[in-house]
Length: 172
Image (cartoon, rainbow, N blue to C red; front, side, top):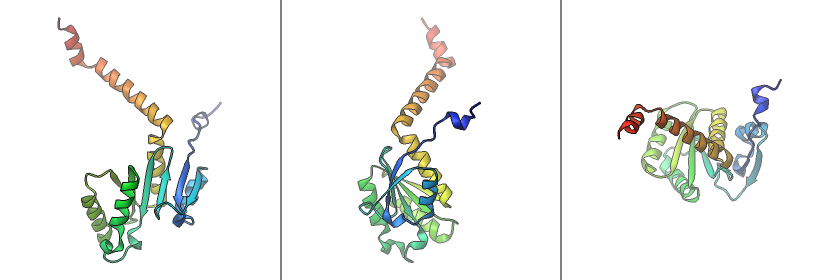
């Protein structure tokens, strides 16, 4: 008898990754899940791009930044990334919430408030991989259609079983 995991085919996708991340542990974890990885010099340093879902992730480690991170060019780098990628996410790698990490998070949130940039604080490589793959899968074409269909069915069910809807039906 097939188990539940065997019944559902495992989702696999192609990811375009910055060559700066070639020796990163995150790449090893993604490869272990048998996703296809293509390295490119033409994408932003620290970027992961999921072409089938239209999402892009930029990995930033506050430990790699200068003491005054405004001078490090991070804001300009993020601004360029957001302009290039319509559906963009910033992976702020912070294994612990120190003063520097919280300050960087606060400045980035204030600077990009109202933009299409979403910020995901992550603590380790497992969170990076899980977050990226979950978002990419949920926004990829076959899955987004399935989610949309299930949401429509749920909405229809809620409307049909609503006491307000029943009351409106009874009004002549």
